[in-house]
Length: 437
Image 1 (cartoon, rainbow, N blue to C red):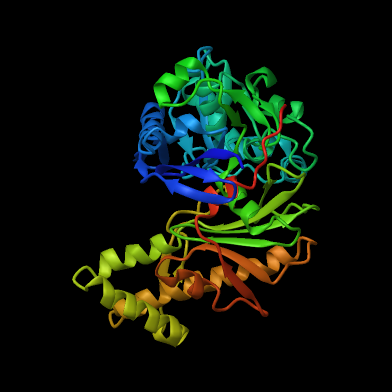
Image 2 (cartoon, rainbow, N blue to C red):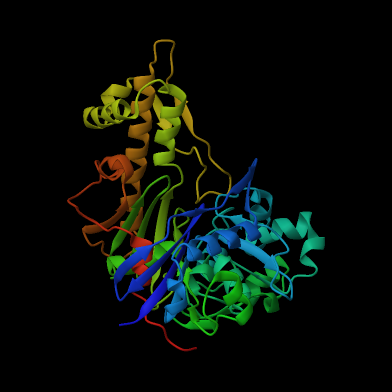
């Protein structure tokens, strides 16, 4: 039985784990890093992220020196440009960044909306497709990019620093906006030319379970690893969770948390402008994804703004009560659930209350948020069902803090069975079997 070091790098922290087969033997505490938020800009300092990787690995007490391979799951998009020595020329621009609306409009106007959908699988959504970020830097900070030798996402950055390789996987390539996602057959010269960038700056694309490179002596010293340890190309964190769920055609995987992500596994992707269509990363399959960018975080916002003096247990009881009562508790108040924008919109939507009067109460506002989220969750099902893949009615669910999963599934049309999966990303990494390039 092989022993694996799993690295799960999310939007705010790194977790390192030791996997024996499909079992997580131990995990590090979360090693946090900060996102810098300035208006629509959301960035991570590359060196701070690398320090978090080191901290997470170090907390395993030397066990990482004994592993047979390193498996990697990363947030995405997480765009960064590198120089010839693999040093970051830009911050890591995360999926929460929305600065590149103008560039997204320009990309789509020049290439064509339907054409972009049919090649890339998605429209060029700011924060969802990183070609718009690249376009922003070309326009606003071109001097930074003149020394660029490699441009990619987080797994590309980590490989360049830890193994020297220039690689990515199909799941990350899909969200660059420069990959022929629906065919899985390489970078699109047409999309690159539309953006005005050279194909030579992009990494090689290999399946996530391929060995991307071997840990260099320098990286071994820096991160507490054994030189020569193979590291897989890696994939998006959501793909790892889908692998744990089985990755069967028609499988739904729902991550309920601050952000709510609902993904459908398919072997026949049908692009839709309200969905993100991307490669799974292995097995020649795809995921079609619908996201509520602010789910639990919208509930936390109401608690912080309207219920500061209420103990958390009382608030949770009130939340559960209103979830059972239904929309009548909101009265005339309605809520649009876009507190963190929308992942499938170029023009970013915003959260809003309507129907407020001087008689409106905080209870009605909380109920309106609950009902807005519930309605938005249920509205995704017909869109996914219309993509041509028959939905399996057993849904794998990860997360669900404060039983948010039960709320978000309350009004789903039809009959569903929900199966909880825990530690989905880390355990999903165990589903990968290393293969040579």
